Length: 438
Image (cartoon, rainbow, N blue to C red; front, side, top):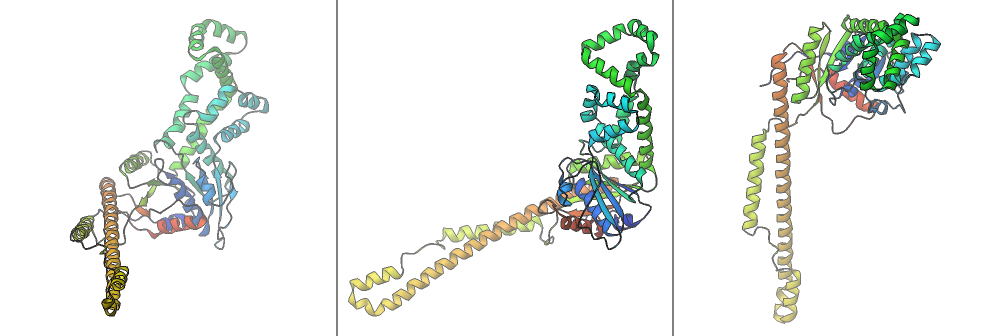
């Protein structure tokens, strides 16, 4: 018997006007994007003015919402039922463009141009570890500040670890505010001849070593970047801290998305514990791609036993000659009639006998094919029930450790979701409130 968990009630969460931010988090490949999009569609059609921010590079969100493209600007999703007064916008984070916007917004025109043209900045903004997660936080802060939407749904980056979403902004902030950056900033802060003297005397050995390690060109780019960004470093940390506090505030809800697999649920458990440690509000866990069966009363063991019994009976019939194409038939009867006139009177009877034999053979072959098909279906059912049992055991282990976490199942679909109809179907499952241990 499965362990029970509290029911995750999605509709009350979406309908509550105090809910302003929902963050869908979890390890990669568990369906965060589909979950976020489904929540956005359901919230909008229940009257919320919602925007979905996705950081998924696969762009499946754009396809499922019927948009030709998603970019850094929220775009309205067509086809949403607006009878309840809601609407839905969607956007995809453009990491570099968001970084550029931050630079332009928080520096004068000349300094902004120097930063944007700096080779080190171009590398940093395009792929520095943690930049994507940091810029997701920046964009979330921007959307919240605009106050154009009463619900923001965030699809977190497809990181190797779900914890990267919380850790990376701090790591980038630490880098921008770290000792290495401050060391490179020192000459610029001193200024004038004193700065040159300081650089020549106090840092000659250091810069010589760094030039050998980094290359003289890269070191110059880094120092130029640091000098231009000097006035902005504090702003990065301040905004990151402000957004972090926003995630902790009432009105924010975290939904951990996981698949019923050992690694995904282990990652989910780590995230649940981390959210508790950081005092961040956890709404519950969405268990995605759960398998089930309409014939759950037929266990895997019984299905396998039945399949083996059918296959053994079929082999015995074949061994006993149960399916043999006997030579007696209509053509043989006709040949016998032609060679012996005396047999003319019995030809009709012989022909009837041949027809009966052919029909019997065909019927036997059909029955054998049916038995093979039934045995194959029984084996497929047994495999499905084994998957169901394995998922239930994995889920039970999570529930035994975190029995207080509300959960809901989303059944595995035969294919990907590519339209609003599919997203609505996922939303219906989320709203059903079926507990994970049902």
